Image (cartoon, rainbow, N blue to C red; front, side, top):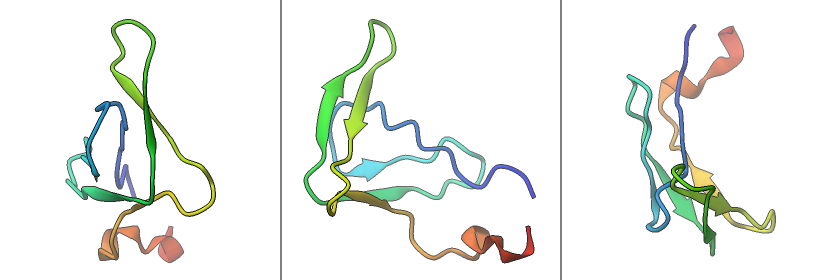
Length: 68
């Protein structure tokens, strides 16, 4: 099994988490995330509060890692 998903989370805004992997399993940002500026040249960053802000990746069978 290879890379299942890669979420860079450097968009600076929005409620979607694009997947940069070949699988294209985009996620949805839930809750009240805070977007911050990242270091120069690196885009932004997503701050998750640990209390209900998360990335919903869906339930595609690619995420069933029991066989890994």
